[in-house]
Length: 369
Image (cartoon, rainbow, N blue to C red; front, side, top):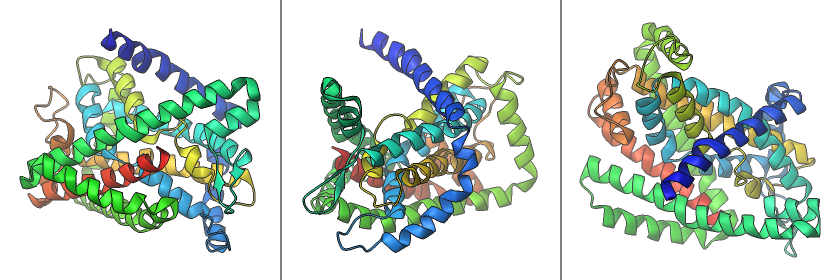
């Protein structure tokens, strides 16, 4: 029964619904994610003027980093590898499509969070789907806001956090031989010290952690690209051909590529899940749409940059063979691929990157919970 519901909701209903919403919002907003792409950087630059106001509000930049901390997790390393293994290289193309459409969804849900946010007695703000459902749709819809809040607590407070912790612990066990139990205890202690400091402490940690972890991972990906410049066009063609079934990569063909690409894209960037608006609402901005534009950029960072970095590390390595089912999958595939490029220390690098990605996501999840 559980498998049936999972296949129905996650395999069909939810995927179709989120894609339809992304496409619909893109058209209705006249492709806002493309029209205002350059404005994202101007807003982030201007947000520094609001970074130290008297109430200690978060700036757009701080809210962006906190949002990226949540979106970028184990799925950017392990999830992309799974998508390639089960859906073939073409899954990456459909992941890009979902990311671009998801930018419009994120823009609208985060703009709504700003428009319907609520000021607290201490001068800070709270907001998110629970607020804009109850305040925007009226009293008759408070039951939906309550249901959303309960589901948010269950999924982000417990479910998703357990997934991230497990991915980090097993990765460290494989790379360094550290028992899963000890890794879990260490994570719990460090996370506890941070989350009890509230959203401002989480934001301060994210402000340091996110640029380091994302920048380091992107840098190593650029090194890999530099070592394989002549093969990059071939990998692009492999991705596109596999996406449209022009080159058979896995048993499921184009259907498997679309399904895995869409699944991993939605799971990674969280556009439409209603999590990012809770962070977007706490930022201090002159206009609600400003934060919507900034949060759309976080989807771009997650899916179009970091997920793509993992994909090219794998597809340029030769470890994954598109002509046959790969014997290695998940984190192990990413580790083996990077080791093929830079040597055995690449395995340890992936484990440390996964630790930082998972740690930042756990902080974000507990903030939401």
